[in-house]
Length: 153
Length: 153
Image (tube, rainbow over all chains, first blue to last red; front, side, top):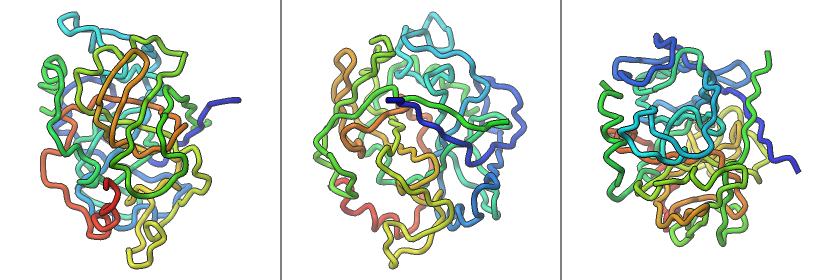
């Protein structure tokens, strides 16, 4: 039995960030453009939500870590499992971010807080509902807070 | 140029919910079991995080909505685009939930708040970082709050 799952881009990212780099995403505003296979109705009423989850494909990532490693190769950080970090060199190369929806016009969405480069294929968009956010305190290790320091600057 | 993306399960869900139904997920505790292709190190230090994002495959979903429709087929709800709702009959059949990590033992995670049935293939697990959560108010339409009323009961 094959366990392969085939997915396809439903939209693409357009923005000014051409190469994958780690930090400074605050200023990047992106357009998300629905592919032609879909009716424009696929985005109907999406502007009634303030935030969206974007699942995308790290299409330039080539390596895959299947065990543990130091996040960003920084030896001051502990060795952690690939599923205990958000590194792009991961099995299935899927990225996930919560973005703020600034504008919806037909087949285009304008968003901020999307940490994906120009040309990135998007494989799903879901509205953020309060009921799907954690309703208790988030606990995370110090290295992860340190790593994020300049991410949204 | 083919734009197909091939992904594979990295883990499977084990729980008591055998059929897809909409509501009452509060009592369901699930085990997540890493597939054999991975080293046990893939989960190293994951217990230093309280919450995880789980991306999974709605493997029993057969239909795909590519335009708009009434959520849950309920005509009291407006017609909304497939990317303005979280319905399983969506392009690529990907699900996404934030779960609470209760326990990590070797290749197994025990979690609550996973709304996926027994046997569901998981395609990614990422730690939840505060820095990836919305830092401003979530706006969502009334129908979506109404739909969620019994979801986590």
